[in-house]
Image (tube, rainbow, N blue to C red):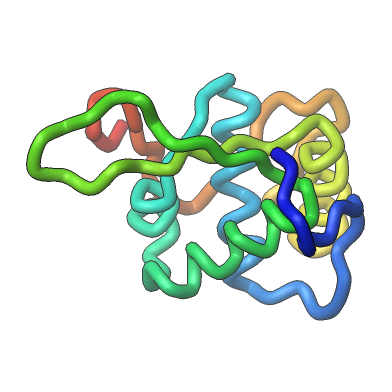
Length: 129
C-alpha cells in the first residue's frame, strides 16, 4: 500500500498502551491461524470501544506492522469490512513486544500460540469458539 505522508518504519514510537497490547494479541493469534480479521471482531474479542480499536489499527497500519484491505464480499445491509493481518515484520515485532510486556501470556519463540483470556472468534462464521 502506497500512501503519501504515512510513516513506513517497523518499530513502535512512543508509549505502548494496554489497548494496543490487547489488539496485538488478537492480531498475532489471527496471523498464526492464517486468517485476516476485521476491526469489529477485534473490538468484540477484547471488549474495547470501536474508536479505541480502530485508532490502534490505524497506527499499526501506518507503521507497517499490519496490512489492511477492503473485503470484496458485499453483504447487503452491513457496512463494508476492512480486513487486517500482521505483516512478517509486524509479527516479529509484535511477538517481541508481547514477550517483553506480557510474559505471563507467553508467545512461543516458534510462533505457535498465544494464550489469551478472551474467547476465540471464528470470523468466517461469526461464532465464538
